[in-house]
Image (cartoon, rainbow, N blue to C red; front, side):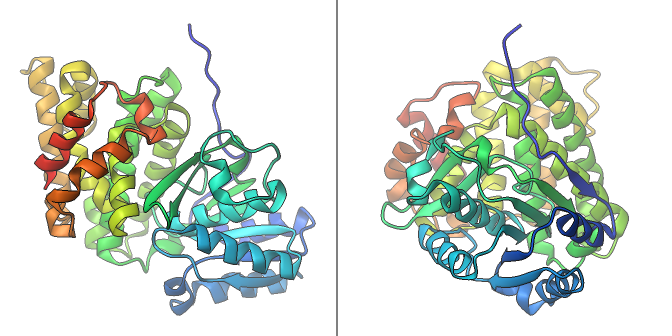
Length: 383
C-alpha cells in the first residue's frame, strides 16, 4: 500500500442559511479586521454588502478588495496585499467562485511568507501557513474554497501558474446555496462541468485512492442528476444544494488525487487568451479522456455508470466510449460551446499552448503520458 495524505479544511459549513453561522464562527475565533476579497459583479448583486452587514453586526470591521479578475493575476494579488497591509487585517475572507478564492489565497500566502506569488509556483514552496482564510462560495464548481490549489495568471509570461501548497487551505469553507441562486445560467453550467472535470480527472489519476474514488464517483452521480435542473431553474434550492455537495466532493477528490491534462491544457488557454476556466475544461474533457481511454478503460466504464449509462451489455472499452459520449451530451444539454475556436483559440498557437501544458504540475498525474505532438493533436481535435 502506497502512502497518501488527505487534505481539506478543518471546518466546512454546508446548507441553506449557513452564512450566518460562518460569521458567528469568525467572531468566536476573535478576528477583528477582515479583508474581503471578491469581484465587481458580486458587489453589484449586493452579496458583498450582505456579508459586510453581518460582519458589522458581529463587531468585525471589514474592507473590500473587489479588483479580482476572472483569471486572477499577479497584479491582483499585489494590489490586494497592499490593501490588507494598509488595513492591518488579521483574517482574509474570500467571497465568490474560484477567482476570488485563488486571489485571496495568493494574498494570504504572501502576507505571511513575503515575496511575490510567483515565488510559490509548484508544490509546497512556502515555509509558513498563510494568514487565516475563510472561503465563502457563491458557485458550485471550482471547489477552491476547500482545496490547496491556487491558480494565478503570470501577466508577463501569459501562463497560469499552479501553486499547490498545503498552506493555502482555508480554516473554514462555506457553501450556502442561497448565495448561488442568482448566478447566471452560463456560469452555473460552466462551473458544474468544471466540477465534473475535477471528479473525472481525480478518478483516473495515478494518485487516486479508495477515499478519492468514493468522493469522485458520488460527485459524478450528483452532477449527472442535478446540473441540468440547476441550470434550467437557478432558484431550485434542492438542485443548487446537491450541486454544492457535488463540487465539494469533487474538490475532496482532486485536492488529494490531483488532476490531469485537461487542467494542464485549460490553464494555458486561460493564461494565453483570458478565457473562462470552466468552459475550457468542458470543451477539453472528452478529448483528453479519449486519449486516456486505452490506459483507463475500466475506470471510464465506472464513470459511465456514475453518469447513468446502462453498461450491462458493453465491454469495458465500449463503456469507456459511452462515458465520453455522456460527457459530451451533458455539456451540450447545458449549452457549453462545442469547440475551442468558438472561444477564440487559434490553431497557430497550438505548439506554444502544448509546450506550456507539458510544464504544468496538474499533468503529472494524468494516467497516460503524452508527448508535445500528442497534446497538439488533442488541442487540434478540440478546435
